[in-house]
Length: 316
Image 1 (cartoon, rainbow, N blue to C red):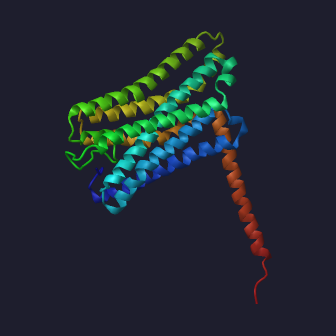
Image 2: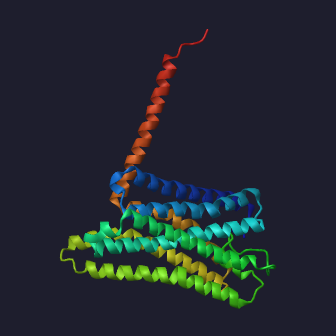
Image 3: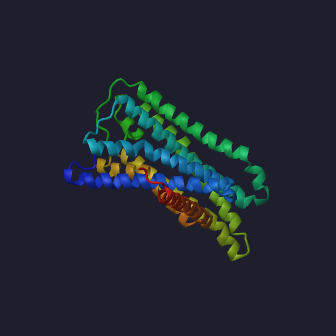
């Protein structure tokens, strides 16, 4: 579904989504580069942040480039195989995003409630295992959706009320009985939404209880400051995901559904780098060092080229 058929708005939409995509990719890649280049940031918290940034790049790259091509070519058609592929990758990246947020909440819980055992509990092998399990869980979610969709021989309509092949919209188009559709929705909602969100709530319940026992206000503020960025991202992610679910479940206007999908798949990954960098001094300093090195190397290359041009002997 296109956002507008007005030809005068197409350049504006193209510029908007292209700029949002570039900001998302560059912002998240800058966080990955800043963390990997600074040995002081080689900790579980920043390892999970790098994984989250990589997943955000994947989620945005699954949806926005196709939308940009559709605006440029004035064609919103997508093949059956292409639609299933886009649906699969959007589920994989979206679900991994969800599970990584739960893992990050567990990391903060261990760091604040069990600080003496943090290095033992969150060792590199366990951190890698948690990220791998998040990815495997998202693969199973994608597999379940594909098994259900591939069994269907007909669809009630061929127009998807979203700017990409949204899984919830694809399921609404199937000609099967409502029982299969509802059971899949409830099962996925329970396993991949309710349980992770409950884990986040429980982690922060224990975190708040532990922080309130800290006697000094400075200690409480320092402990809360390490959780502020994560809480903001959790609220943004689950708020938009819940909005997408409501628009698909209760058949609210397709325009509102498209806006909710854009917020979930485009705006949230774009804002994550700003949320983590603006509220984290370590990330800010690491980014400044990366940018300084990049500028210095670029100036060095320009000076070298200038010297070579000045010392070059003109040919006769």
